[in-house]
Image (cartoon, rainbow, N blue to C red; front, top):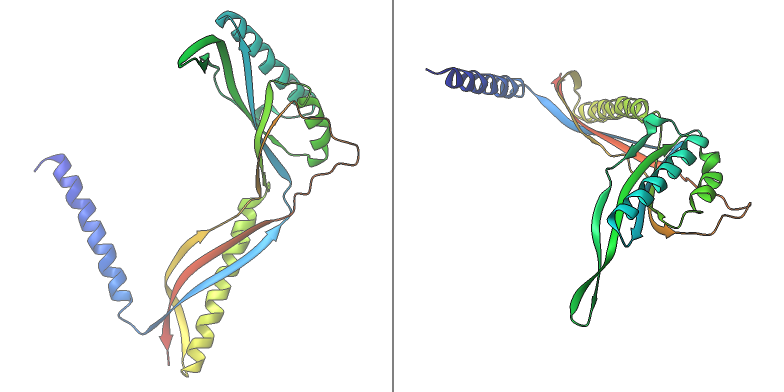
Length: 234
């Protein structure tokens, strides 16, 4: 028997054993319930998705212009306190700039493009940052999404609440049958579903914001579902 065959046999044995144990556990009287919990939180982070595109007649000229544009944007981000770890950039893509006229494609030069994504952790800087970026006609904001810096902690809290909800449901069901619940036999997380607010915008050379313009982050709604099987006791 080859090493691969032995490895496959071991995996198969483990799979069968696990399912056999699971089936045996469910042979006892039990109750199966789904626990659910949901909450909402005000976001404290904003992820931006920017596009930078330059056009020129010659490839070398457009490459130089594009590098300068990217450098200018990164300088603005640095000036407004965006940490390097919160910035993602893509490599420059260089393509021919063509237009379709008189039943044929005509080359008009080249364009260079790249993407910059960054995370803003101080939402009070939104207006100042956007006003600075809006000065560059080659910069477009493709969209943004809100998030929360402590989402993992929020999920953990919600998971606990979902388990408590499942336990309470099981207790009520068992009580209606003059029984009580024992230890959990199976605990399964169905999934967490945070729903961050997302907005898609295509902006280029947008006007500066007025001093009374504000963003409204709203809230992030998120939920957690678990399946729990408890043993039943008389």
